[in-house]
Length: 352
Image 1 (cartoon, rainbow, N blue to C red):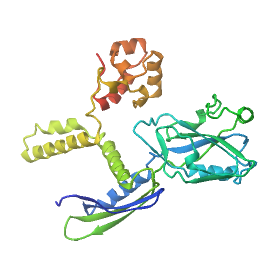
Image 2 (spheres, helix red, strand yellow):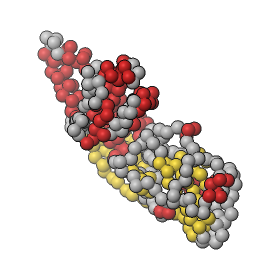
Image 3 (tube, rainbow, N blue to C red):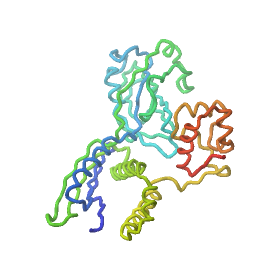
Image 4 (tube, one colour):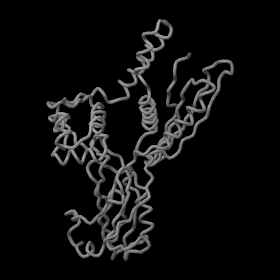
């Protein structure tokens, strides 16, 4: 079989919200290239890593069909403009919690994305993106919610105390405004995917090559989107792979079968080493062990039981034994196994 080819043969930036790349992959077998192509395309289109505006609270607005005095656009037009905003984040972003951003502008001005007061972990892709136009006697005060698809919108509310940046001269508006406008955001960073199968030789088994075209919204590059989709597919199907079956075959007298299993295990270890974050070792002396429990992939019930026992970080969890968690935190053995499996990502084991 020929060596695999993975090459980006073309890349263009149409504008800040449109990236394009074309990749050349192969070779693939004749009877499987279509399956691989469709799987990769659907995985790319199902990407939901984008951060978007999911809800707005416009001060002085009672419903989305109203209009604001001194604002050129209607509330619906303002919602559509905010829906088109895309953001990039850094490594400190926590995707399990929503973030709040603010906007306040008055007088004769054109509002753009650079006027939004964002959290330090987020940045707008196109800071010159148009949002609204204010006339001489107009004022626009907006409180917006930014998040990934994880939080539940039904539990979100803006009835909390307002940020100090907006408390000045907005008390009368905040008292008369209690309407949260949800936005049906598109969390996919990939706008479009197209592929073309190129067959070089009918007689060769591995002679099909894949030309893959990817368009993104600017929040991520097409190369990163492709690598992330491949990683998701590997993690999904590798989780179903039974390693005990492979080790049992090693006792077989068949020499060819042994070589095949050994080579498979070597490839599997390579994949786990390069695609899984299992090399990160956390202990009580490591500063990374202060990660919050919200970063663990466990149920909300387990997090609630741990936080009720004043366990908020992984460092606090490492101090407790399994028997103590079962006796004083009311954690069942099944939940304890789920908690241990989530800690294995960081190569952490609970105390016996």
